Image 1 (cartoon, rainbow, N blue to C red):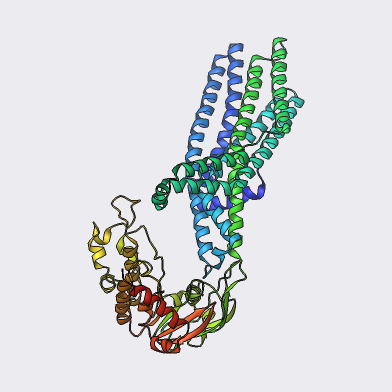
Image 2 (image 1 turned 180 degrees about the vertical axis):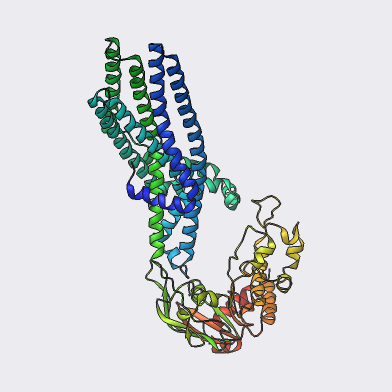
Length: 589
């Protein structure tokens, strides 16, 4: 049998997932194992009654044997149904537990840590693979248990004929089952050892069959290349998964075969010599057959059991890895914040598994109620600064305060309700347009926010208006352009402001618009959000010049700060970047 710890772990989850189904499954396992043994005994008695001319006794035992067979059939059918339902519930419970564990830490550092991310991916993806889902244990353990109970009962029955024959069958059967378990566990290890190549195989399959890369694949003439790489990866995966059977399983199987054949020959010889009745002969011969059937049933489910147990073990590793991530939740209220300023005090920050600090000894004050634009080259730390403000990461060194309160001491859920954030790639939900705008704040009407964001024409153009699903993966759904998604993202931010957010963060959310349209959009935004604390990130100086103050970041530090006019007069980095961009846009077409 598989390891006790894995079985007990599964039993605990199964009991939590459905106690009634658990009891039904356990009961039907016992009945499925006992019924064939009862049928064998009954048929033996039927033969004995017929030979002795005791027809009434033969009929009674025939009814008993038929009843046992009927119980076996009904129990097997009920066990399959209960095990399937219980398995689905087990997988659902495990998926919910993983989702809760992954979302429990207030930040996202643990999701970008390579080791944790890999484990979470294993926990997530293997739950989707039918051949390795932990829920399959509800069926496979039942098959294993039934086979082992039948083997033990067969050994006891044959022990009544020759004690050493019963013991020999048990020893040979247990040995064959053990070698099968070892081989199955090794095979499961090969499967999981090929996880990386399997992921690459899925990647090439998606690359060749899904829309995102379809244009480039065809334009560069790569369909055959992608198909070939998929085939090569599959071959490499199979080489790792498939292996030759060892010698020990073959020897164990041969030993079992010798015991069974020798036992049947002995039974037949004893019956031929008149030393064994017809009823006993029928019973013992059938016992050998059901013992083999039980061992075969265990063998069929052994690999599936080991794969599912391996998934469960790796799933638990993922939970433990996520559990080590700091919760980072303070308790201080964030209502009405910020009233004065958000401030960075000597803040340094590096991403997980990296020694490179994207922010270094940063000091910055963002006054409440004013707009601050942040500019700088790619990698200067602009988006990282925004992530720290949102509490998605904690500073490596230094502190961030909101009205002199350490951000780490604030209730982050309360603080995030004060934020309206639009990132460069807006969230694209395969849900209705209505839900896309109201997502996370479903207690108001978003029409005004959509109008203020200039997205009314986007909604009006949808075939079912607000109720249109924004994904072509669903019937009646549509796909939006990048600019349309950005307008909905901006509408979501304005809706959050409408619902009480007081800090607006715009991280290049209008990158799909041309420079003139972006400048006009931000002009409207700054007018509509006057009085809010606004952080604006953009590469276009026609946009950032509208902010109350502009900060220039370079290698994670503030090197210049002031209004557009003040920075031009300073004639530093900002002025040089502005003149270069102005000259480029001023060139004739």
